[in-house]
Length: 171
Image 1 (cartoon, helix red, strand yellow):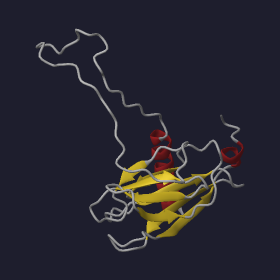
Image 2: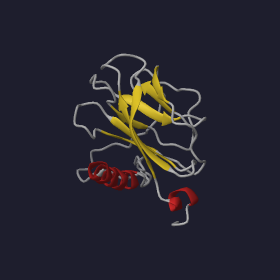
Image 3: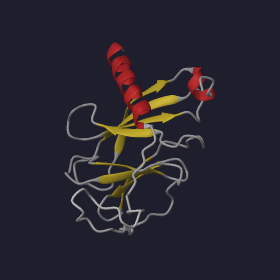
Image 4: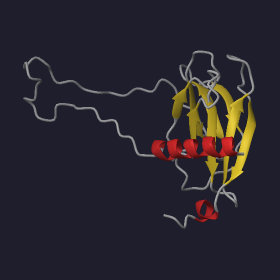
């Protein structure tokens, strides 16, 4: 039990750290004569283009990217509009699987993280669900072989969290 408790503490600390907001800003030479120190860099423009898009993804969640199944290719995880975690092939957007987590509460913007707890080259997905009473923390492990679709998951453990995680009384 102590091993699970120590792993849970480390995962919780990592999860809280990863929930910090991230901003990516592109400079577009706001001042017309702004250049680098050598005076050689011309103004540039940044025009984003979509490689792919997927229906059913929640706008409240930040997608996470990583090699989930150990096949050497990046998958994208995003919260679905019904609360499950959707997995997509990073290069194409083709569905690669789903983690059936149940629903998340509306204020959970990033209720999960990707981490290789076991050190086996396959990522585990750590999920906190505060919409249940008691709130829970669950570690999902990949059960399918690398490259096999859909990626399948099993539950390694579930821990009930303190009541204030569910009620939000510590905020």
